[in-house]
Image 1 (spheres, rainbow, N blue to C red):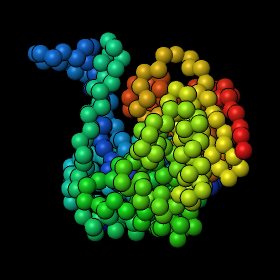
Image 2 (tube, rainbow, N blue to C red):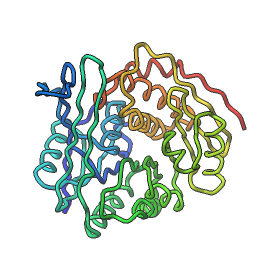
Image 3 (cartoon, helix red, strand yellow):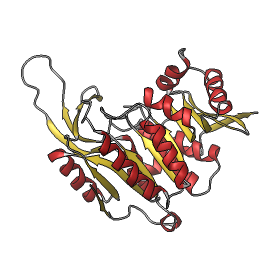
Image 4 (cartoon, rainbow, N blue to C red):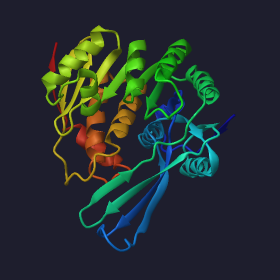
Length: 332
């Protein structure tokens, strides 16, 4: 059974008058973020609670879409006491969301931040096991919302119990609803979804290497992958990120290399950079930007996200300021 909670809108502007971007998070988390001065191997580590929040790819994307002034509606699973807490946290944060009830307990993750080294340890359990009926309910809710949305973002891992082709079924539902699917996942679920075909696919080096079975470290490596994805019909737009180097955005019009801008500080953590990038990208696509321009803000936003510890949100003003410093180089 699903319920909808209408949160307050974060930001205002022209995007408030457009249909909401829908995101799907099948395996969300309640993130407990603690901090210690220094993590010791013996004795007790005295920790301070830094924050308690909601995580999971699609939820993170919905959060950041709102921070950029866009509209988003997050579809997610929710089970047990942790699921109830997840719903409350989303309500308090003002994120519009649809919770699909499941029998098993939603997972909790622990983020441990060591203030001395400014290093983060992210400990994440596998999460709940879903049965077929719960997966079907998520598809039904998603299809209803996708009919009124220009874009659907699927981001994050697939929980246990669902078949590897589940995201392929999501891709079919989104197409039938007349929306465009943006995919950001990994593993067997990724291959099955790409076989169905999506509008935009974003992958990092690890995911890229899982598809190519060889290292993807240069723009030339990324171009070979992106060309393959485009020519096989796996995606209409391919975005492969290359860490500190930048990203390659490929469409039928050609390939564009986008270089990470100089950072106004030392990078702390790349956790959340991918979700931040996707949020910026889909927000600008929904506003009418071309893919390369949208991707440029995505690269700037991922860079801004690296300046914050683990799950903490990036500075939107920093992301926007870095946008003008993203260098590009295009080729057919």
